[in-house]
Amino acid sequence: MICSLFRVASFGAYLFKKNVIGMSFAPRDSHEAQVQFALERGVPGVIGVLGTIKLPYPSRAFDMSHCSRCLIPWGENDGMYMMEVDRVLRPGGYWVLSGPPINWRTNFQAWSRPKEELEEEQRKIEEIANLLCWEKKHEMGEIAIWRKRVNYDHCHQQNVRRKMCQSKNADDVWYKKMEACVTAYPETTKADEFAGGTWKPFPERLNAVPFRISSGSIPGVSIETYQQDNQSWKRHVNAYKRVNKLIDSGRYRNILDMNAGLGNFAAALESPKLWVMNVMPTIAETDTLGVIYERGLIGIYHDWCEAFSTYPRTYDLIHANGLFSLYKNKCSAEDILLEMDRILRPEGAVIFRDEMNVLNKVKRIVGGMRWNTKMVDHENGPLVSEKILFAVKRYWVAGESNSTSLE
Image 1 (cartoon, one colour):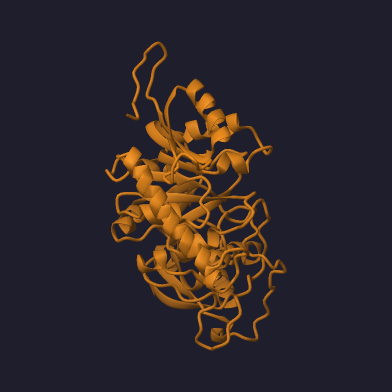
Image 2: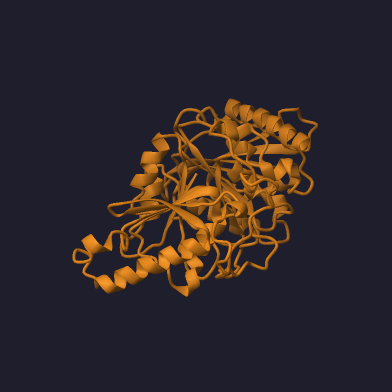
């Protein structure tokens, strides 16, 4: 996976064709709605910015981080932004920087900036990269590439003084201020061992047992329960496809899983025709977003009592498993459903999976929103209390009755 600050998502679109999925983000700035443009192209993207708050991703999430002409002051604030990139980059991962100040000697006039300023900017970047123990692998033209060491035993700058982060949970990021400190590597026992375990090539890693699970880092989740959950979701998704026959057709490209768990819904859907944004609710009892990234999938932390960081009408299919039971007494179901309506395109679909009494309430509300619905039993039969509600957001105009049917 790639973490990327981007312009109009062309890099992400190119990588997608190579079976590489990117988590791209950009602010709404002078370039206007880059994220909206990306999503309309079927390329993953969220509204985001490197500011004062930590990025909403777990530690050791990305294979590579890429920044193209993003003009971030990497050397300022004691290297805080590079240290945040280091937090989300897996050991052995790469940081790619293109544009200013790389190759400032050749380009300072074209960039209309003093060469002394650009020289100092690159000097600071090199200094912080050295502090982080990144190895510079390549520089040519306007592109420079660094690699994060696989563990601290591979760090040859042992005498460099580093301010280590005090927090014991590097994944605790929701509304937490960014810090100018270095995130500790997981412990290793061998000099050439990858901290946090090695990752298999994709798609093999999709169903391999992630290191966070095999190492016992996720409370209540064992290798056995992980594999059982994986098999269960294959059955669930097959049942979904029998009701909504468009799932495999290519009609749904941008898919949102609002309560992703271990990422098994996305894994069961795995297809070059689509991608899934796996959301880890911040109020979930167990944080498994790191597992999702180790599987080669993408995702983000979010509290569904707040608006999601995307533009209107940007997702084709939304999956909500146990979401309304999770948020019971946290915020109103109406507010969450209105947010779903905002980000779902007309004629887009939603799959709700929850207890019968919860889904009856949801069905009443979405009926008032003029969504078409169809309630079905659990694939194991009508005696199971969990049910599935399929819905389609109608494309309608006031005074007209045209609709999209689920039948």
